[in-house]
Length: 366
Image (cartoon, rainbow, N blue to C red; front, side, top):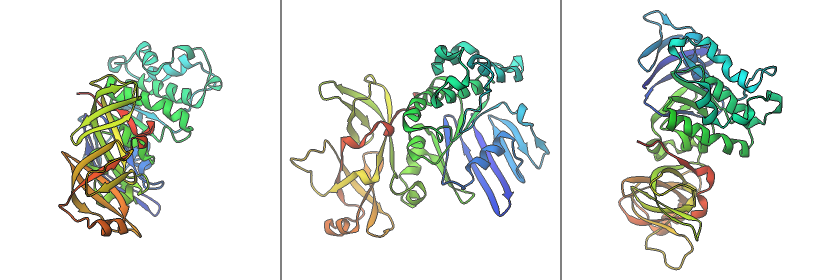
């Protein structure tokens, strides 16, 4: 499914101007608070009306001011999941799940209760009421209720923002299953880069009401000119790879990718499984020669492509490793001391311990 957005909306002194297109998978809208992410999602849902523009989802025109088209929210067949579950407190989980289904025409229904319950692990919760659920359980029910409307598109507006880290870790695998097993197009809003890089197929960076960049997540995260928008502390590179070996004795897994291989904490995934790894720029060190007698297990040969703009005492270095672009952040003193310049061959050193569970996620299979 293709999503085409070209809209403008003024809200007081704030003006949103957004134009981009995205294909199947998860389209992540990323930016700081107040950038315009939620406003854009409300325009897609029909909860707010653009001042001008066009919105097309899967070939269906939802809004076009020139043609006078403005499909009512209830007829757009869009599932919307908010920060809080917004469940009906007087209804059981089963009744909450089925509530949205009644507003979908029988001819448009393609989802039934049993698969959704199985997908989201809700079978033991069906007779409970929301007051007896944890925050993560409430969000899973909210996702299930949205799925049972048989949507053509799912909107998730910072669905994990109100949860602690443990509950976030609980929900993320279910979002991956929606993406991979149902192949349901998802627009996912977040200001947490670790969520975005784990889930997204397409990354849309929004800053000050405008789209600063949009494209495949690996390309966007490796661009030097966008590091400040992503957040320099958490900025890095996204790599999609395949589990090529598992070392049970050392609790490690080997992931092959376009730049070589990486050793990461055991993923509990079989050989052949696809996986996504986020490598933070601050977790990469550079060396001019192959290091010897060091504890770092991941050492990759590469060649410097470009240098970023210096910010204080730090600078980003873009390095080509095989077919993959990686970004390292080092001090300007180290850069000058090593004499690093574009075109230079060197080695990237990446600690295995930096690949925490929040950096690892399964990717869409072909």
